[in-house]
Image (cartoon, rainbow, N blue to C red; front, side, top):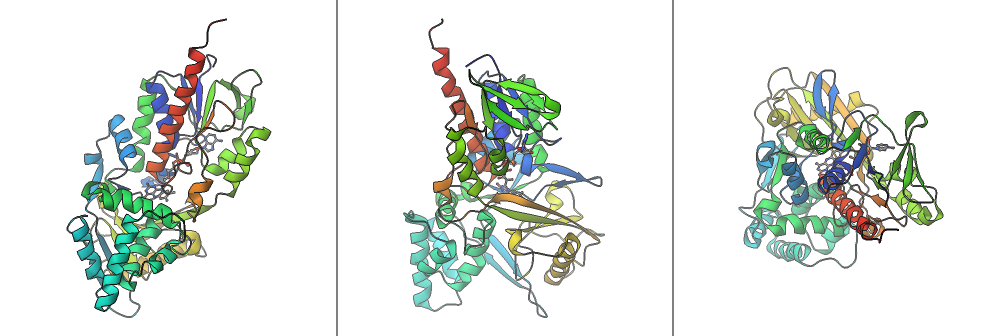
Length: 449
Ligand SMILES: Cc1cc2nc3c(=O)[nH]c(=O)nc-3n(C[C@H](O)[C@H](O)[C@H](O)COP(=O)(O)OP(=O)(O)OC[C@H]3O[C@@H](n4cnc5c(N)ncnc54)[C@H](O)[C@@H]3O)c2cc1C
């Protein structure tokens, strides 16, 4: 280890967390971010004078690490997030017919209450199938999977009745995994269900932001980093990383500028990581592995209404239409805006943004009488929003430590047992920083001379 700083590349939630943990431990940190604002995929953007989030985000109570990092930068989750007990209100668009509603609302996440809610949701079935479905649901929650398989197959094997599949498991799996149930990893989905539903009412609670995304973590984190003495370089893209023969790394920035670093935490999404990994044979297998991880898109449709829309619950699942989840922006103070999330949007193509928001607006107007059609719309599609969470994904996730000493990976793609989420990003940032701090110790205790 030399006196050079630790370079953290990427100011998403992973990189910010790594930079904070390192700075709090007294390390000299340079945080380098390509974009002019921090937050990565969870950033707030300015669109023609309106502050919109890069995508509607939702956390759950089980996001322990993310919530504690928010607290550590002075954001009180109780004020910044609106809690909703675990319940799914779904609204179905019926072309040329009246919209239908369903509500799955267990009184608590205790086995007895969950069982009663599941039993009720499968009311279209006869008694034997309902009971079979209940036993299957119990197995799904309590018996850890030894072999991964697609969520749709897992639901079938556990005899989940059509009502429960359509109104609970499939929309939930699509939202959590951002991968259609026929292709999504049952093992990761089960891991999320166990960390939420099995962990109690608090962890299972949905938390909907009351503030623009940037204010939840990225902006206060940057402020704290400055106070801790970290150097922040925004709007600065790292072009390459070279491993020096003696010790440490040399980063190439814009206009041929270089920066020496003792250690590097590479906290970009996996695509950029593949491009930035130093050209060393020891990293070839890692590069190949990262290049094979796929991505899935998410589109968020923001709709603006001339008059304030009728008061709607904070989260509504949409069935039988182009949009998947409706989140009124009233909670963040934008009472004229509604946001609609389209998960795995690559599976639901549209010719252009205009036709997307108009279709979503039309279908919402037909689903919610009194709402009317929006006067304008804005679509943000993030092509590489999350990992393609296929069966076997966890086995392909890389370790924090790369084969090159001093080079660490962080990012939502690194955290096993979780889909690409803010929690995964924060956990990975903490792990990378902890590894960098631990690995520094042998050098500190190395005898002088
Ligand atoms: C539309 C949408 C909706 C989502 N919904 C949810 C949700 O409801 N709940 C949830 O928990 N998660 C959600 N996610 C996922 C969540 O946003 C991500 O998992 C998380 O933000 C990833 O953080 P990260 O730090 O790993 O990566 P990123 O946020 O991608 O950060 C990487 C950073 O590296 C920077 N970078 C890249 N290359 C370079 C370079 N060469 N030099 C310098 N900097 C570079 C990038 O600009 C970026 O800022 C959603 C994502 C999207 C897009």
